[in-house]
Image: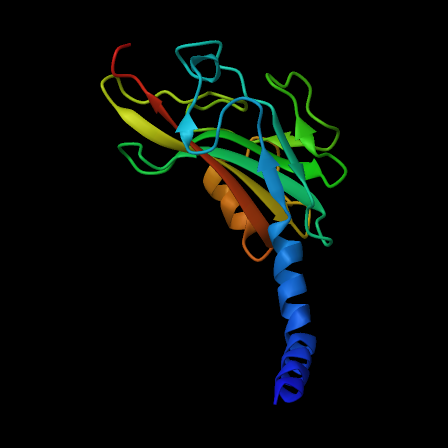
Length: 179
């Protein structure tokens, strides 16, 4: 009986291995920062109350078919709905890091226009007396986006439809209770 059970388990594992291997490969994709901890507080330096510079972001183990990356920083808690603070798209597949306070874009990369009307980073800045969650989202895409520089967040998200291989998010909170 024990031999039959072992044999059946071996057969089952042969058929299920590709599924588990595929899921393990997918979950290896990672987004990291040295600027803050995921699901924690955003330091003032990255906000409108500080230097208003972008944090360092790095990623690894992108899906094999990745052709470009997009990074979007948004505030889903904004009074008028989703508010875009930073949009960086057409990051080449060979790039795996954006430095803190990024001064120079990797070749071929474009900045989108955020809801402040700027093509660049404007950090978290909730209304005084409030606290908002902010999402730094990295998209691995199977294509470069056919968009002009300064495209807004909605245009970038629309262009990414049907091209997203995988996403990773870092979520953090910034409060302006005292400021």
